[in-house]
Amino acid sequence: MANGGGYEYSGLHAGIFLSGQSPARIAQIVEHFQHEEEGDERLRFATEIAGSLQGAYLHVALADPNDIAGLQDLLTELTRDQDVSMEVDILGPPYIDPDGNVWPAKPKHCEVLAFVRIWVERGQAQSVLDALQGAVGDVFDGASIIYGAFDILLVLDGPDYASVSGPVLDGVPTVDGIVRTETAFADVRRYGEYAEED
Image 1 (cartoon, rainbow, N blue to C red):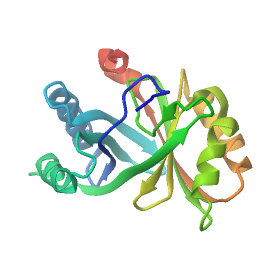
Image 2: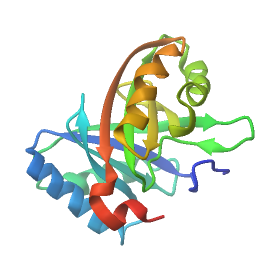
Image 3: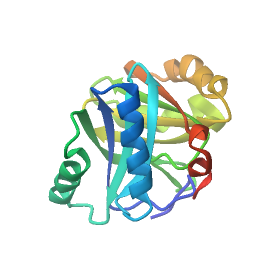
């Protein structure tokens, strides 16, 4: 599959929002995930988040796009002995730009991120997805229709908070069909070399 964000995209992908623990405990969970990521191709990305959602965001992937059972097993592994609340959102169709490049809501190692959860009017998911890159500009890092608690996950990546919060405030609301949004932020630079890996 083609890619636009600098990474391959195939298989079954899910975003996991974790909450229900102290910030110190969430930091430990993220650190453990990042450490395990080196040896487990299913574990793709982890960061603490702040904003309307407080906790962590994890991204996982399985090679087989039909492996729901494998995803369930992985979720059991990740949360064993962890008293956390977990929202699992399976990534559906990603944004595809006019050149055919695929831009899924799959964060890569980066700087400052905004995770924008978007609810849309019934039947408007595809048209909203198609309009987001133009609305937010160069900080667009990907977007996917979601099978989960909301309709679209938009990921923005920039050098600082202002570069990603501005488009959330000024660009996202210009897209017709959006009912509401929730946004969380992460400064991935806090993890040092992890932010720079490919």
